Image 1 (cartoon, protein in one colour):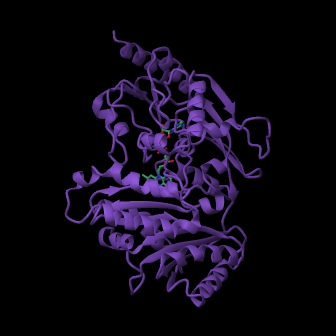
Image 2 (image 1 turned 60 degrees about the vertical axis):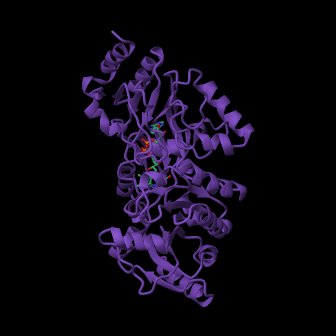
Image 3 (image 1 turned 30 degrees about the vertical axis):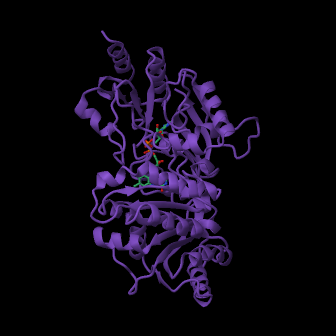
Length: 474
Ligand SMILES: Cc1cc2nc3c(=O)[nH]c(=O)nc-3n(C[C@H](O)[C@H](O)[C@H](O)COP(=O)(O)OP(=O)(O)OC[C@H]3O[C@@H](n4cnc5c(N)ncnc54)[C@H](O)[C@@H]3O)c2cc1C
């Protein structure tokens, strides 16, 4: 019997025959990856149902010297949850660890298994008159363990921070199979190194998160949404500052949409309409929200928009008057990545700079692309309020998609050079995974990178926990 078949027998014993998948057709769904950039193969997919089972699976793999790929909802955009090509790794899928362990609306926290779907946590929080504010377009399938492992951002970072800011405690199965129970719910605990934060954003390279205590917030009672139109980008960034000052800092979303993106959505996505009669080069979706009843938040929005018109920051605005209209404005923003798919190849950049420099980034980036990649079409959109722009570049009309995508690394290099020269980040919210390991080597401060390698070696000396992702020590 081969090593793998002995290991697989042991894994079947731990999780049950039906939860250890080894036949090729059934493994396919776990091997696919959102952007189709990587080929993934695996010795098997293991689906444990408890922390103890996860620990036993890790112990068995370590004893067999077989490496492990933790996997949540498999919606990540950097290939972090994919296995290598040669089929020697075991994917540990957390989908069966899906219980809400407890909810505490008095202390405003919730303790969840790592495999809980993000939308389910939002719903349960809401049923307890509380808010779990992490929100992103993949929320119907991504898991909280994956959100923590990638330190996901999303549309509410401006008010509530990244996933990192919402976590109080973690339970983790370490690369040697031991369980670290750090499921504390304290707001204050100054007792040494913040180890918990090491596992957040580690993309499964330092251990498998099995449960978490997450912060809750008071339920929102009022929300007001508008789509503002601008004649220039600089006015859009200036509006953010004005809006924060005039609305008691109640802005929860401030999302940039370029005209090219809006037009793609209208053309390709059923039910998306342009709410303006005239085209404008830039739009921002602004949302204000509050937990204070009768807060007159709509009045604040009206006042803010009046002042913005008077100061000639905005040229027009559409205010949502019903839930349906709110949804239809958000549909434009949420459809942007999908709409781009219909325009052929799209080379992605998930970058950030200080908000005050976003205009410079987009203008300089657009000029560079026009010079070096004639005909390529920039569609920069996203979380303007956080300085995080998805600087995606659609292929020139009519060219071959595969040939266009061959320029991925070259195009990344020129945009990332620009971003880093402006004090920005080449990966604002999607992480590193397999996709950006080379960029890490190229751009990270050498001292910082060496410290990361040391942390990885200290926690995972055999390099069996998601090897080759984030920092490659192989
Ligand atoms: C349509 C769409 C919209 C998106 N929008 C956003 C957005 O606005 N903001 C944003 O930040 N991201 C966004 N993403 C990316 C993605 O949804 C997030 O990165 C998400 O947090 C990944 O969660 P997941 O459960 O799918 O993780 P997976 O894709 O399964 O895994 C991602 C990484 O985390 C590791 N991992 C997963 N679970 C665990 C665990 N329990 N313990 C340890 N490691 C683990 C994996 O090994 C891998 O490295 C979007 C993706 C899509 C498809």
